[in-house]
Amino acid sequence: MDVHLLEQRPTPGPGSRAIGIHPPTLSAMEPSGVTEQLLQHALRVRTGEARAVLLLGTVQFDALKRRFPFVATLPQETTEAVLGAAAPRLSAERPCSS
Ligand SMILES: Cc1cc2nc3c(=O)[nH]c(=O)nc-3n(C[C@H](O)[C@H](O)[C@H](O)COP(=O)(O)OP(=O)(O)OC[C@H]3O[C@@H](n4cnc5c(N)ncnc54)[C@H](O)[C@@H]3O)c2cc1C
View 1 (cartoon, rainbow, N blue to C red):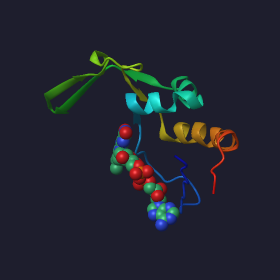
View 2: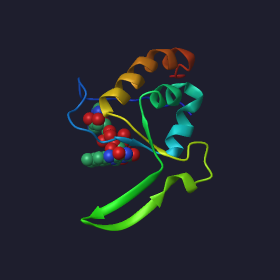
View 3: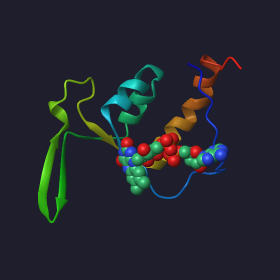
View 4: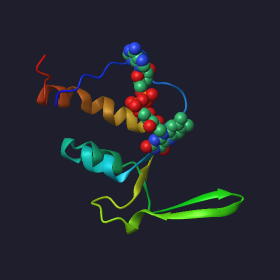
């Protein structure tokens, strides 16, 4: 499937909307080489806790039978830098048909 990405913002936005990159996304990006690059900068979170002062619940990401049994956390600006650097190569390797 060909995908065209369009972005109206001329520069990256402030803040973060993706500090944690989840196992399916890491697997999906692995063939591109992006996952390996992101993991060089990431902490690997194997246990997540939801708290409102008291502990509400725990998620064991390392209980998953996945290739990447953790959530990779890194600053969004680093994620965007890795993706931006890889984009020209990936576009050249897999040009869209239209
Ligand atoms: C505070 C916060 C923290 C989050 N943290 C995480 C996290 O740690 N891990 C995680 O997995 N998810 C996280 N999320 C959720 C994640 O950010 C969203 O699921 C994800 O951004 C959705 O991606 P998207 O491409 O569908 O939409 P968006 O990220 O909103 O991207 C859509 C883009 O399209 C552009 N656009 C809109 N209209 C047009 C147009 N007409 N022409 C051109 N461009 C246009 C917009 O400028 C925008 O950049 C978080 C969300 C928030 C709000």
